[in-house]
Amino acid sequence: LETPDAALAEFDQTGRIKWATDLAEIPAKYGVKNVYGEIGTAFATCAVASPRFAAAFLGTLVRGLGADHVVWGSDSVWYGSPQWQIEAFRRCQIPESLQSKFGYKPISDKDRAQIFGLNSARLFDINVKDAHKEIPGDALTRMKMAYQAEGAEPSLTQYGWVAEA
Image (cartoon, rainbow, N blue to C red; front, side, top):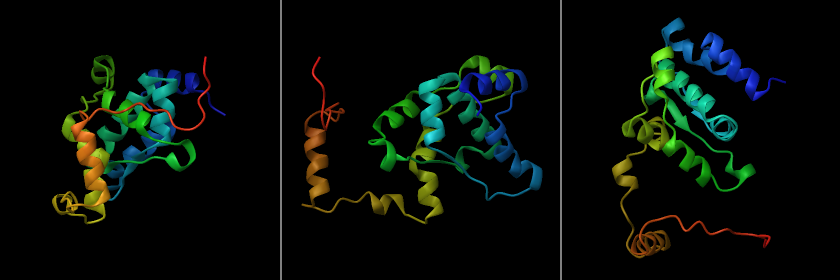
């Protein structure tokens, strides 16, 4: 089993992430346009263990596949609410040192929007404008209105059993 430190050391030396670089190179190598990379648990694990490696992982996929061929995923059924992963991705940026050394570009707001859902909507032929139309009086619309009225900030409420200090 490869440790995160060993994977980062290999990346720093070679510029390759075994399991991500091979995938990212397929379009150029074979002239295909139907390859997509999903960043879910792999990104989440890297974001916690090594934010620099998470940025390298993201940069590798975006450089090789294009931001329009990277999709967001989550194993939240196993790990609980993905909010912390969403926040990590919102804040993730590729450091200038990695940009200059490996030719990565910064992650833009447009890239994030594509990865967070626009790419998947396109793949599943979902009209985003139609999907965003509110249904007056439904429970979700009422919850959204209450959320916005409270300032549209995460509550950071902890659910379940919480030990007191």
